[in-house]
Image (cartoon, rainbow, N blue to C red; front, side, top):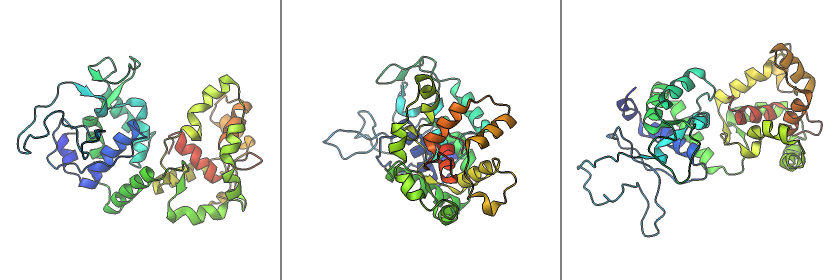
Length: 311
């Protein structure tokens, strides 16, 4: 995996890879990023945009603004926080590229790449970090993603760019289906699902939990999710296959009409040999369910899967 693999990718795929990296480390930055040069250096330049009112935006190149383009600028020996991503944000960045966020092979490669970077390195950050935090460099991220995306079909490439744009522009915090699947999923839900969905956030804020339980479930809270706003074909298929595990005897055409109850969670938990308390199961259903009886529909289930970085 080399920088040349990344440079051979189409420009919009290069931008998608960098934008996923940038969006994961700074989800509040809605700035658009400039196209990546085909002759990009192996030591990538930070794509953060300046806040100087006197400038028109663009790349930060320290104090070398007047240097001609054909003259190489000596790269900095220090490491900017814009060029490193914490290892625990990798699943979020993978989701932005519609790559499986829980794929152990992909995560293993990036863990190995992170072995040389930690917050104890010469990393320039505005505030102190946990000394145990591990990072993946932008260069390694580009290299891994280049291998994963180099054989993606052109149609999928277009979907990738469209989905990335949708995630940047959509600010309402909800997860939506791709248009191809929206009708089929909607037909399987209850008639009052839209009304129930509107009240979901109000109900979630009224839920009262103990401190111990809250610590276990806060990471899954939809309010804290950086999940993609548009459900892709891959994510839909992953969620559907997982949902079917709860109803092994139900034909596919009836599957989307089913809803997960506490008894279903208990049965699957026992099959997997997991010791999950009934209280925790109820809390999970309350957190994501949009129905009054706290049963989880397929739409609810997909939001949980995306939030938990399982699809």
